[in-house]
Image 1 (cartoon, rainbow, N blue to C red):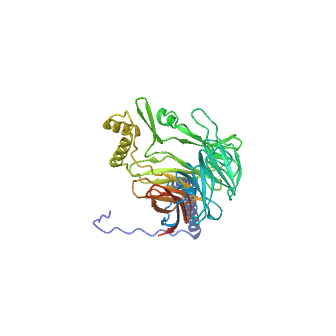
Image 2 (cartoon, helix red, strand yellow):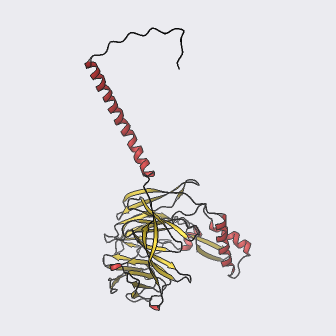
Image 3 (cartoon, rainbow, N blue to C red):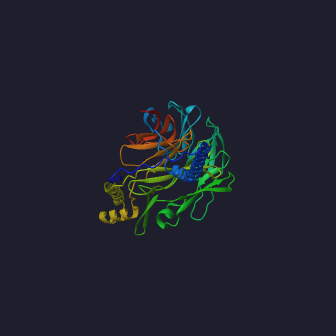
Length: 424
């Protein structure tokens, strides 16, 4: 503030300028103080910056992609009539291997969709299956697991049987034996132990299930993760009758291994911070269980509306009403609504696919529309692309530029699809 006095004050006399030596010393002193301050500031802020960077990554441009259909395979021959697909793998020369659980067979097509051969079939003999569950490649050897027979069958790329082996996880209390989910590059296997459905849905005593790394002779080498069960199944009890069904909006983790078996990816159960913010922790693991890196994947929660929950309850009620000795429809609706326990928000991740080029493909919320959004992450965790796909398309394999999956036609018959992924 400037205050004007009654008269102009007498200016002070000019001070005597310091000597050159004194000036140089003063400059050196100021520079030293500045360096010390800068060093202290850097040491104090680096941990904060690193912590901030682990939560908020620098925004990067995200490419909008489109799917362009390249190949569509619709069965018109009983040799490769598909019914309940459990896996799709890509082999040498782009050949497409489709595992069909109901037919207990592997159907092979070339890269243009022409039928080549059929492997396996229902039975207990060598090269046959009862309950095929997973399949993949070990170099040039295809492996197929059978959960009913607790064994693995091996084929060469031409379809010749190489042999079988019994490989399964241990049968523990409340957990049943099961075959490998993935084969890892060091010769071990990764297995998620599976609890019986009634133990999850009715007793609620099992809260986590382990993912084990095991040798092929059955020794447990390590526990890779303990996955929360989440809301996967619903128990509907009517007097002495017990019915079990999949939860329409399950909040559960996802995990998978790369095609070469060199790393695994675990997608945790989402955390809803409020109605505007949510995060999902995604972790990349080496085969020995050590974590190589993690990211906090942000999303905006989408509310689960009353219109959607009412339609789900009505669908369940109308379906169950046809069974004998059911309660009246209003009571049935109330029971179903109480047992389902709908979440406030839609699950942000509904499928995980690890690409053949180590990319990570995340299917987003199931909103009930005709299209569903997919986000594609690089190996480091940065979102590099996003696109819309048909809601009924189940993606099994992907890489930058290509997507393979199963899409039912208007009659519900599975079609094998290959798309080219192009930037808009």
